[in-house]
Length: 168
Image: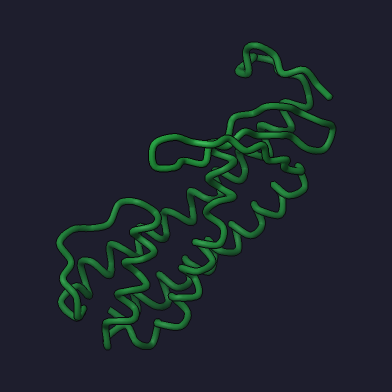
């Protein structure tokens, strides 16, 4: 196991830290594409389909959870969006299924580095306190996450370009 240096932002970090930075960085950058296309879907629905919705929308949702809820609800409550309903609802489910993995990598604190894995500490918030949890992540799992996120981003892009914009 490598020792974690006091300064994790070394100009020339050891190879195991470089490998870790690369793995986590790829996951985070790939997820940003997922969120960008989700934002574009939200904006198009809000600005182009809001009048077709059977529920009142006061403002554009900002959090990831609220965005996926908004898109699902809009797809289920707009006849204009009916042709896109099944595909869109499945995409929102995929986002919700993967969001915790991204969240853990982004907000977890690095505890240990091993040759092919690392430990992070995650807080589980409760009403007035929190518990911590140690999660071990294999570097190969980061690559698999990156591939899942890329596939999701690609499918969201197609949904946006072929579906929402064409439908409009």
